[in-house]
Image 1 (cartoon, rainbow, N blue to C red):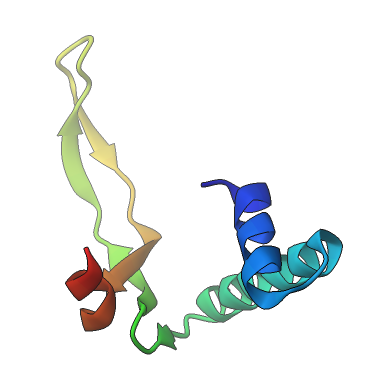
Image 2: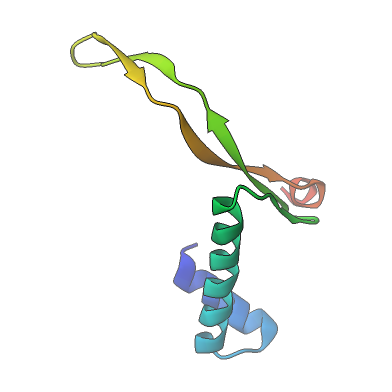
Amino acid sequence: MNRTELAAAVAAKANLTKIDAKKAVDAALEAIEEALVANDTVALLGFGNFSVVERAERQGVNPSTGAKITIAAKKSVKFKAGSALNAKL
């Protein structure tokens, strides 16, 4: 499901126009993004948690040459599904 399909599904379930549903989906995703950029956790009870994790610098191997390379440290987004979502899966 892509963003357009998600907006259409929200429109159908919430009895909204597709334009209003797209605005709502975009606003929700933007709010999640802003919280993660601020290094905050987004907890949606019954659905799951979005959080930021820091990945340490590590050694890797270039597959084409076999040379060792250093992979830089970075921040990444982690999603952990909630118990209600896991139960439905």
